[in-house]
Amino acid sequence: NRIINSWLRPRRVWDLYSNRVVPWWVARQLPHPISHAWMDEHDRMDVLTPINGHEWPVPILKDASLDLIRIEMLNLGVEYAWLDVLCLRQVGGRREDLRMEEWKIDVPTIGYVYDQSVRRVVCYFSGMGHPLNLKACDFESDRSWFRCAWTLQEILSRYDPIIGGETGDDGVMEEAIRVRIQKQLSLSQDLGGNVVKKLSVMQKRVSTNPVDRIAGLTYLLLTDSIPAYYEAQAEEDAWMALVAVMMTWLQAQLLFWYPEPGSGSKVWRPSWTQ
Image 1 (cartoon, rainbow, N blue to C red):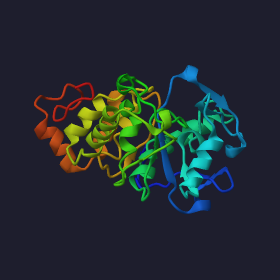
Image 2 (cartoon, helix red, strand yellow):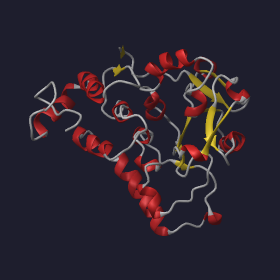
Image 3 (tube, rainbow, N blue to C red):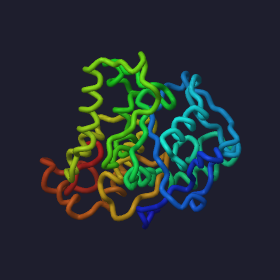
Image 4 (cartoon, rainbow, N blue to C red):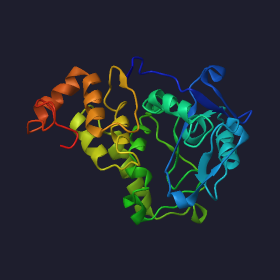
């Protein structure tokens, strides 16, 4: 139930030259990570593609194109990329039993791709393949990139992200929006070693599966090992497993900095609900 090596390479990468998904050992180098906002289901469609050998349907926006994303990445000089919908087995494929087994390891170790990246992350803030076109209200949406639980660990690279897609309105955007994007990125990147601050930021994030908010903390909390991922796991059980692998000085922060006794199974640290 625990992944001993937290520096685990991704199972698959997207070979942009041959335009197919290949095992990591073919590339033998860390891929260029892509981050994107997940839009509403009615704006997405599932497509079968030869890129992943038709192994599972790939959810993409109805007006987006994997070919255009590939071209954009190639223009950036990228050979290998990592895109979750292509490199992480998705729901609805021919081997659903295999997906559940792979997710135990692959989902909680997603952060490694971004944490160890020596390249800038390519971010599609308005949805995968979409040009950047944000309004003030978009920042508060549950589908906002800036509110997604998973994206908090996707800007761990020391380099500023590359904004994917050509910007809307011929590159013109309100200065207020640009400033807010920069502010939001800075707030997420400047968390330091304060575990309470990281938990507070994650508390404001949203996820389709409640347990994802806990899994998305793994690389932010500098764990010695990583708990396996279970979709149906109770949040409190997932939190207990995560605290158990946290470094002792971070556990000490929970003990000394939280002002109340724990309401869960342990009194010395707060429950996930708290």
